[in-house]
Amino acid sequence: MQSNRAPLKLIDGAADPFSGRHMVTRFQKLVPHSDLTVLEHIDHYPQVEAPEAVVV
Image (cartoon, rainbow, N blue to C red):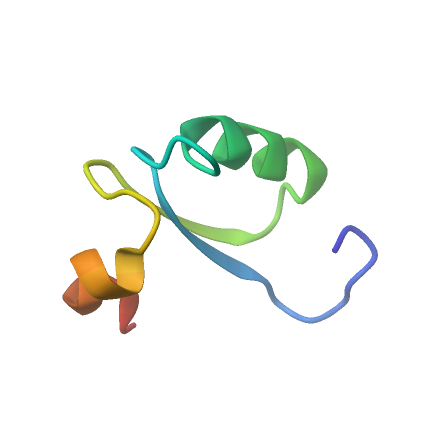
């Protein structure tokens, strides 16, 4: 992902115990110019838990 030239977007549920807030922090360090949406009270399935926030 770091050498990718295409625009990247990450949508992450911050409350996810597996790939939540800690993964967002790491992703920002590795891919600093990506488009990032953090959904604060959402867990592992943002597309199910908050579909209106995922469809952009």
